[in-house]
Each structure stands twice: as structure tokens, then as C-alpha cells.
Image (tube, rainbow, N blue to C red; front, side):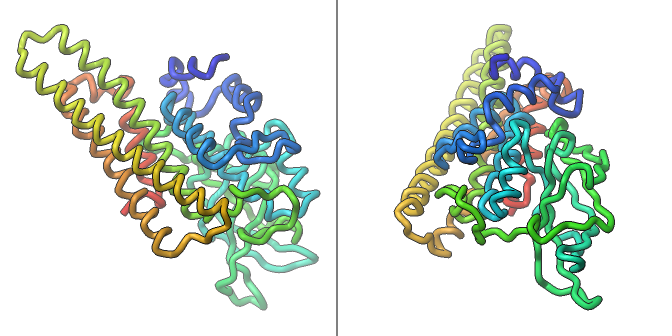
Length: 346
């Protein structure tokens, strides 16, 4: 299957509520969950900017598809934090992909060379096909909850999936809640970001995690906005052919050009700042707290602009835009949903 064919199946994907198996096979074949994994483990070992641009391109095809590629690849950052044997076992399979949550919604109690883990975590995108789940827990010592956090890598068969994802958009991301109850996790399947335990780490893995996440999610929003603008242009062209009101046609064209210009400015600003930071990081220059805060602010503001662009245009598309099965409506809902991620909201 050609990846571009996925665009034609976007409604089918949304109504199914998950990625069909044949599309998952395309992801596995093209290593789209392994963009930042070493080639020895079956990955593509891309540069950060290359990978971020893949996120945007996939999201411009379909928001659900792009979001899941982005989330799946995000799990690549955990590779250096696991001991070599565990890392190879988790990431070597062709269908290997991690889902999970960064929120410390669980408890971990030390026992017999590991932890007894209990907890429940929401919004675990890709839960229906993930081979491993990661989850954060507060460590409980001597019956007292501490503020220490440990991350755990848990096998799929140990996790209960609650099929509760019912958002307005990104309906096919299977971002369900996961739950574990008194599951024993050995010490060698726990990890902490920033602590390297094997030789598979590369420069992408040491890039500041928050900035990586912000760049990843913003690239999804940019891709979905790009898709929205393409679809809006097609709808406007159709309306213009039918309209006898030249003033309205002119107003629509001006509005579209105005919003397209805003999009291109946001896109350029994003890649300019990200490229600058990436070059510094590759040279071993540590990004300052001020630079990281500027990136956070830029990411949040850019996501808001993407939503505003879509909102400004959709108001001019009439009743067609409010039908849930309409392509423009689906793209708009996906954008609004993606932009609600905690890394992008005010």
C-alpha cells in the first residue's frame, strides 16, 4: 500500500476507531514506529529534524495516523534507559511499539528484586496494538508514600485495557485507559530518563525531553493544519464555481490567503528555532532554561494559531463543515483534539 492511500481511508479509520491491520503492517514495514531507533534494532536512526518532518507529513495525510506514528516513535527515547538485554528484547521485534503515560498515577512497593505496581493511567494512545506499556509510579517505602518516581516497562499481557477513549477527534488513536493491579516488575524493567544503561543512545535521545515532546506534538498540529488548508481550498474552489457573488468569492479568497500566510509564518518560526536548538545540542552546547522556556512559549502559541486558523476558515464554509462525516469537519476535530495536549495548552 502507498502511504498516500491512507488519506482516502481516513473516514473508515475514524469509524473503525483504530488503525486497520493492513495500515499497521505498512507502519511496521516502513519502520515508522522506529524513526529514532538504531539500525541494529531495525530502526531508521533519523536526525531529529528529519523525524519531526516525518511526523508533520504523516499528520498531513491523516491526523490519527500522524498522531500514532508520533506517539509510537516517542517511545524510542526510552531505549538508552534500559539495560541492553531488556532494551533489545523490547525494541527488536518489527512490530515493537510502546504506549503509556507520563503521569505518576501508580504506586510501586519494593519486593523481591523489583516492585509491586498498582495504578491506572489515562490517554495511552496506541493501546490496542502496543507491545509494551510504560507508566510512572510513586515509590512507597515502609508503608509511606514518597515523592520518588520510578518508570516501569510492563509487558502487554500484564496490562488491562479499558476501552474508554471517546474524544471528539483523533477517534482512531485508541487512547484508552490502562490499569495494572499488584503486578511485579523486576528492577531491570524500571528506568529513569537521563540515566543511560546501554550503547544504543544517540544525540536525539539526549535532547531535552520536554522540548522534544513539544516539537513532536506541534509538528502533528502543523501537519493537520496543512491538511485542513488543502481541504478548505478545495471546498472554496467548489463554492466559487457555484457562486454568482463576486464579492463573496473575493472575500473567501482573501481570507484563505491571509490564514495560509499565518500558517507558513508559524511553520517557518518553528523549524528555525528547532533547527537552531538542534545544532547547538549536536555541538554539545547545553540549552539554557530561558531558551527552553522560549521554545515552550513558541509551541503553545503556535498550536493556538493553528486552531485559530482553522476556526476562522471553518466559519466561512457553511453547513458542509458541520457534518461529522465531512472531511473538513473530521480534520478540524482532529486538530482541536491534538492541540489540547498538555504540552500545548496554556
